[in-house]
Structures are given as C-alpha cells and as structure tokens.
Length: 99
View 1 (spheres, one colour):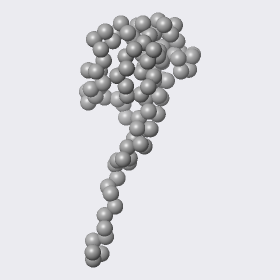
View 2: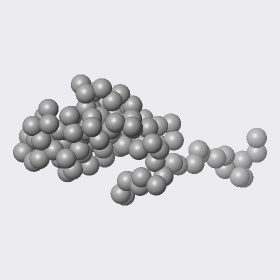
View 3: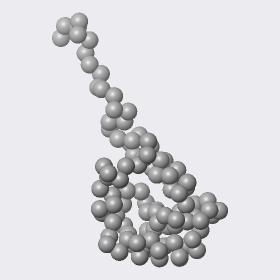
View 4: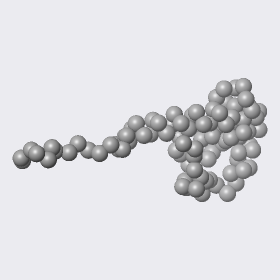
C-alpha cells in the first residue's frame, strides 16, 4: 500500500526550513545513498524511525528504493509490536457455554 500524505500529519511536523536541511544533508552525504552507496540520494531520511529529530546528525541522504524498503521494515516492526497486531478480534466465549 502506498503512503498517503493525505492521511498523515508527518509533513506538517517538518520544520519550516526543511528544504534547506534536506539540501544540507544531501550535500554533506555527497548526494550518495547512505544505505546502498550506489544510487543517488534524493531523500533526507530520519535515521531513527518515527522521530521529529531534525538535527543534521539525525538525518541521512537515501535513494527512493532504499527509503521505501527501510520505511516498510519500520512499519512492519511497529505493527508487530502493537498490541493490536493483525487487527484480530479477541477470542470470544462459545455462545453455547454456560458460565
């Protein structure tokens, strides 16, 4: 499932100078993805997932394919750690049992 900025508040939490920070990160990293070190970096990624730490040392330049994979892994880990993992209903007593 594609990410939907329409239902996310992530973009609104970025600082007003985000584009300048993004450019600084990409220039610092030589426009090279810091994950695969093969493709050009186009995204300023938060190293620690789901944080609002916008310091330069908390960001890294990454390419789109690596960013998508990293985000998918982080999302899967968050869902697995959730008490509602799988969104299954809690087990119910059998309706024929007398309590």
